Amino acid sequence: MKYTFTSSFAAMVANGKVSAVTPWQIIIDTDKQTITLSKRNKILIGVDEDTIAFRFIRRVTIDQHVLGADITINTINDSITACCMDKKDCKKIKDILMEYNNSKDDGIVFG
Image (cartoon, rainbow, N blue to C red; front, side, top):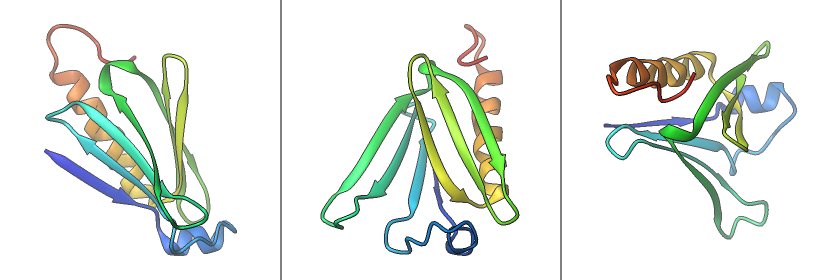
């Protein structure tokens, strides 16, 4: 199943990251066991993407603001951050990953 989350325009404005045409987007694909973070680049020609397999995830950190939140997903040797997401979307992302982790009998995907 695929889940798609996009950064909030109100949170971008409130946090001084006004970038209406270049929002962050997180796509969680539980079938392929990947997370893709994408953002249109500054010159609006292409899209920058980072894709991480679930097995490399080590920690999910949510940094809440007055409006919105930033989510950081740490891997074995790197991390990705999506800024200005809705707080409920960040919690949903974390819940999806934890639920997937708990459904695996063969070991812990992330700890």
